[in-house]
Image (cartoon, rainbow, N blue to C red):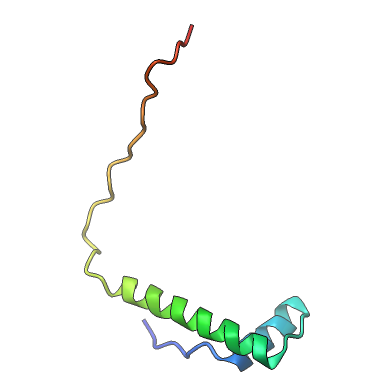
Amino acid sequence: MSARNPVTPNTLKSVAAELAGQHISAEKAAAHAEMFENIMQMIESLRELPIKDVEPAVIFRPVERGVDKS
């Protein structure tokens, strides 16, 4: 996987303007960029976990007790 560029306030301002037609302030862009960068770093750390060969969990479907189905 290629290295990604960090999420910056300029990135958010450009994406908001180009894709959504919204102009956001520098302060709002900086606050959101910090949050998105943290999220992207967490996703990156999850991708690094050695779980490629792990089988999925068993699906659990609880049974309601005491419910009359007549």
